[in-house]
Image (cartoon, rainbow, N blue to C red; front, top):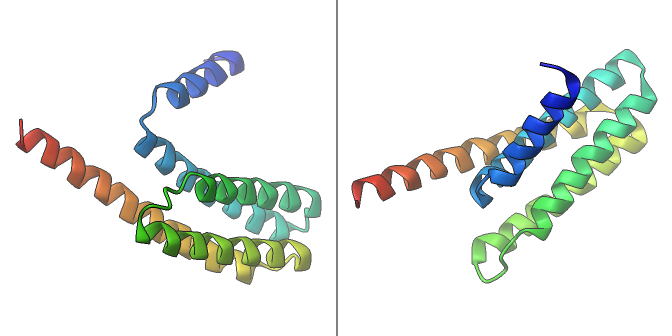
Amino acid sequence: MNYNALNQYKQNTVYTATPEELTLMLYEGGIKFINIGKLSIEKGDIKRAHESIMRAQDIIIELNASLNMDYEVSKNLRELYEFMMDRLIDGNIKKEVEPLDEVLDLLTDLKDTWKEAMQKSKKARYENK
């Protein structure tokens, strides 16, 4: 598959995804960019570390913006996302992996929980048909 075809496939995946799937993609993307940032710090590639951490920050901003504040859980998630942003900024400024590890653990837990909720919701929909 050539590069343009791959980009078209990725774009179509995003355009056809449900809101739940988009949230999962954001969690996965945040995890990916934090891992790249960590590896880049360890290799001394400061520019790539900065770019990757900034992309992770953009994802957290998007997750935060997508919250429906009518629900109490959204208020808790907003606080958690703000904490993650603070830690990403700290890790980026100091070029330390420890703050990135904290965010990575939190994002991984959120992703796993979100994925499980999606599976339970899907199962419940099929059982109610």
